[in-house]
Length: 417
Length: 121
Image 1 (tube, rainbow over the protein chains, first blue to last red):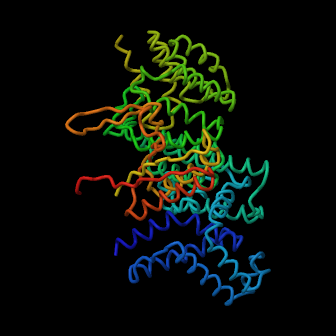
Image 2: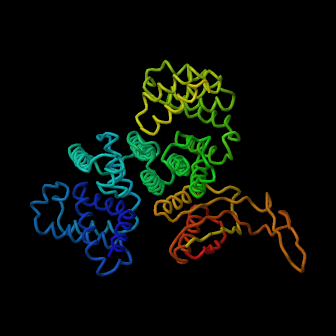
Image 3: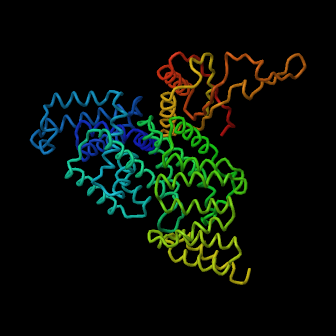
């Protein structure tokens, strides 16, 4: 019954955030909510192959979870008092809360609360991404381990540690307001962005990109945008991730080697992803967005709409980077501006910015600084200096594919070529 | 099955749509992205600004350009969805109109839902 298993998995992917969000509201414990959800899932895997998939799978899972919770409540009220919040209520009140949780109107708040909980300030950024993938995206421990090239047991212990931290911090499950809400929203966006970055350029290992992880990040950004529709930065993030993932297929060749922007076959860019990205960017801009994610999406859009590297509006890209640098104070952004300036006004203009950055301690071990420097020097015909920079970049690179590419660029001019 | 939904506008209460409408449309797009049914969407400029109808009648091909087109009805935008059946596509169109009903009072129009032919698998 392979098909039913696949349906269960699909339903789980789509509905787990909503289910967990609702269970979290009622039980006020991440552990408890996850146990109930997993039990409902196990029940579905057992029943659906026999009974067929119900018309409303989400409601089926929710009422199954409710039945389990009520059974357990009756079986061991004392045991449940360990979960302080639950212990205070009566069984009837508990049951009523579940019924209310089944009502549709809470979906938005529940999912958002779940996302906020996964990105609680007491957790490290790494734990936030792992917990978000597990609880919001509904990925299994194995899938997360595969995505981060880590062992299942490492991921499992990170998840349980994160949950313990949340319990110890007595993380309030209520939706934060005002300034704290804005900060938490940014930490949710940062977690999604981190997931995407890991897929876009893997920090370690043999593969340069991990498309699955990028797709999950796009889905997470979309879930967030659907629950916080009035915030332009969230639509900007979604637009950015759609536009960047449109190039995934063109960024590696058949042997898995990276293909840089100038050499990419633009007909292989995903036109649907570009169209979705453009639609999300349009929403962000019309909502008055001009924050870091919206600006990054606007830059990605300039690349997506250009027919070639040469016909790209590099002046506009450089100007967008300048606004982005002001908004973020990031030196990495400045480095990107140097590349755009090099394209718009010639390699000298770019090099001037890079030379300024070369003394910054923060970038001392960042392999893309010598890489960009080498590229600009190469364009100026200063080939020996360029090769030295590419070698330096290769020394600092942590991704195997990238290191090979940089070594090859360094060697290109060895024979006076 | 892919469906194209075309938005026809028959009455526009204000020149520009309110911001709330974009938030509502953004939420619908994002929801469809999250469940994998959203293929693409775009806005279309009013016929009068840049558009034409090219027709074949009575053996001659004629072009009617913007200003002469029936301006009371224009296509405002389109979206393409990949969904199981017509009912689901119609549901998407209803949600889109509901967003207008709530966020842009006075707006009137209709959505044309058309299946896109696909080569047999």
